Image (tube, rainbow, N blue to C red; front, side, top):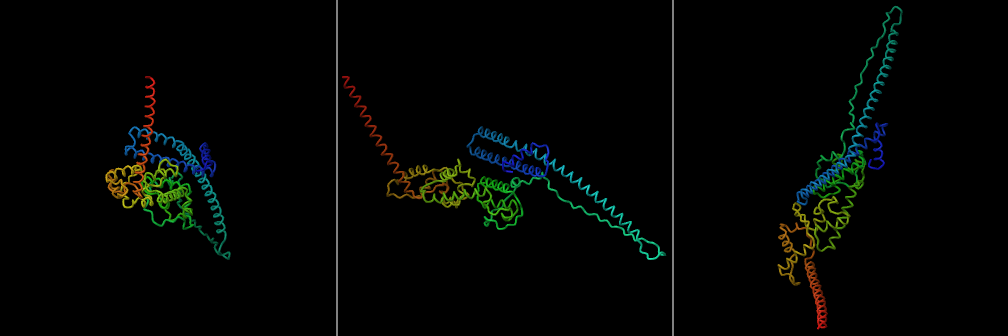
Length: 429
């Protein structure tokens, strides 16, 4: 039902007063599931946006008036988005209930008719058998008393088995169920390719993809690293299966959200491998900006892959494994490093080339300035502090040279103006 043709079919069904056949009944049930899923997805988006606004308000990034204004706008947009789907749900539920009641009544009438006809056939056959059995005698002579052999027919009532009927109104939507699902930690041996071809549950790929998308958002909002094996594990746990093959999926990248997640992570790993070689000084803030530009995003968080400091290659580059539970500063830029290096070299009298620079002492100096306990919480990576010092010295030399040129040009301009004015005064005399 995710295609345009499916939506147009549902739109036509909503205009009808009743369902005509089983095909329309099936289409109506699929349309109902699609509409309910759309409402739940809209609610999840609303909750996620509301949480972001709450965090901005608690962090004093938004004022009370701006917060109230945005919340009201968000609620209004949510109502507008949900209104048409709610109409769909109401109308389709009525049509499905009406058709189900009609089909049940027809089945009941058919069953009664079949039972009555079968009972008539049984009574007629039993009467014929009784009469035939009374007519025949077991005696072989006329003197014997004619005693008919009467066999009393035994009638056994068949017990009607209680069959459980599935109610179409029962909520079996995987998105709603996954809201209340608690997931254990992911094991280390989650296979990328299915190990079995035995399908135990036939779940539409659209529903599986929706489960995957929701778990990606949840992991990101929880501040966890979003990995493909975590998503696959949560899908398997939700459907209570041991392998993707039980759901009819042979490879993890057949799920669109998981495929996009894998491709995104591969691009990030390639970038970080190159960053190791060409970057001599950088910060986490600048890496986030670069990654957002690579994927044409305005912010790194739009990638939905978790915090940058949870990336394994980032942990290795910035030595963050020992402080995983500590807060990392992610507002530093290279210009801030050069500024603090200027202050540090002035304090330590380290402007001369022969003077040594201790990188650890420099980082501790920055940590003291920004009130951080551990130097690795700064989110700074420097290959060579001497290169940074030469950079500052080169900038200062260029600045002095530019100032000297500007002074020379200014003096020449002033001398020319003074000569012109003195020449005019001489002519006046």
